[in-house]
Image: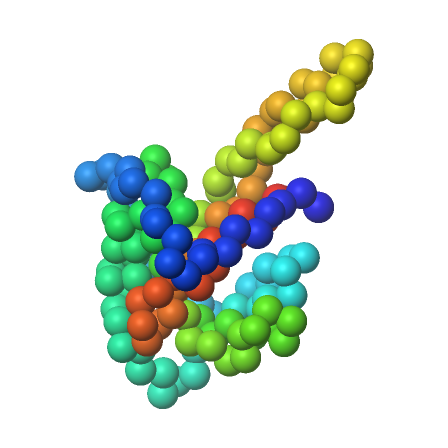
Length: 151
């Protein structure tokens, strides 16, 4: 499985905002678990009594500030979830999810030195379908994870 994990580092300067005025979001209710394969994180529907301190639009605003990785050309799915993953440091963490399930990712790195196989070089340089997911703490508004997962 191709993919990469991009953690937001405390104190790191965020990239310059590049959000387009037309950037849009769909606000949805999560009705079934979503497994972030290879990361050990499951997003479950939030408890009935969930009371986030920030709203979905406030979480989505992290795209405008550059705190979350976003794709202005696509419409994001934004939903409240309970993130669980014992190895991820998340145990029933209430988060807003900014999800781009139909994103396109570019491989990173360079082909192996001396690679004379044009098909291999082309494959390594060809964009692939992926999912871009941001997890925003529903109580603080801080971006916890920005993850690209290959599909």
